[in-house]
Image (spheres, one colour):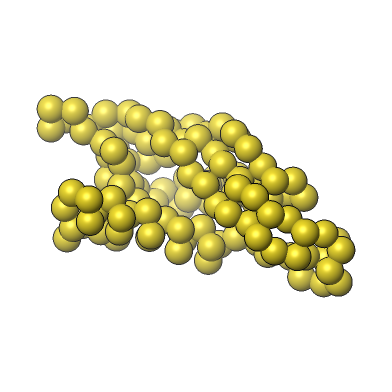
Length: 115
């Protein structure tokens, strides 16, 4: 399993929890929550599949689901920003060797927003 950066001191289940929490914090800090008059309610998960290479970089992505109103594109923008900034994940390993794997990134939206 690949790990989002920031949890190097953790191991096992605690490392997975730390990685998932760090990723959610990053996603929420970079999500574009529109402002303005309330006209839509967007609730649901935007999901994107990403491939993390042996070097820890995201090599590809594919949108899986979006609750609408541009939320899927918002998540895609965050992922492409991570790629552009060359933020490295700790790669997954098999027999101690780093490998390419896919994982799903989800961002939950539960909000009212203006159009």
